Every structure is written in C-alpha cells, then in structure tokens.
Length: 120
Image (cartoon, rainbow, N blue to C red; front, side, top):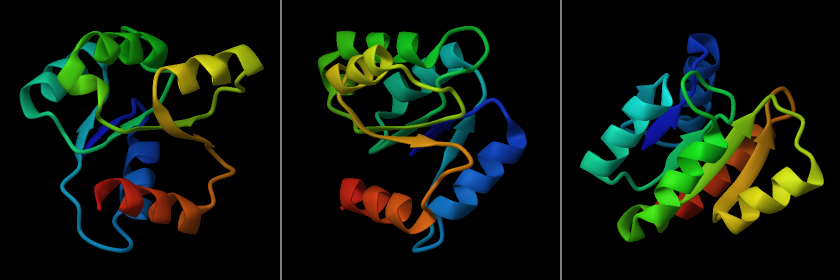
C-alpha cells in the first residue's frame, strides 16, 4: 500500500488506523512525483491519497494513474481536508476513486472495513 500524505502527523494517524485489523506494509510518501515513481515500480494493491500535497495535486496524480492501464486498476482511497465541490467529487468518481473521506470526520471502523474489502 502507498500512502501519499505530506503531513507526518496525519500520515502516522492514518497508518495506525489502517493497521488496526492486521499489519500492513505501508510505504509513506510526501510528494507526488516520488509517489508516482514508487507506484510505477511497485504496483501496490492500494493507494491512499491526500489531494493537497507539494509539487502536484492529488487530481494530477489520478490523471497520471489513469494514463497507465496497469496503474488505472489500483484502488484509490482519498482522505483529504479539502472541502470538495460536487464537480470535484464527480471528477474523483470518474477517476475510479473507490471512496472519499474527510479528515476529522473519519469513521475509523468503516474505513478499515473498506480497506479490508479492497485488499481481500
């Protein structure tokens, strides 16, 4: 799993939440270009993405993933502090985002259950 989150405290919290049901190998990345390199090299089973990160937006990362047939099929979960407009929500859905979560309003149990369903 690749976690793309520029805030170290948020990254630790999200990692802890995701690992409550079982240990997971989570590669944490803080910038978009590095994340894309890792995703292309490792083809993870799941990507957890913040939309607001340095060097490129989460929307740009999704567009890059969409260009590659192998990467386009990787499930993406968005966890962001950004207030999403309806147009942004539709854009995320069209980019195959499997779920969207608002920081500060996370239902931990539902998030963990969703991750488990995506990882099998």
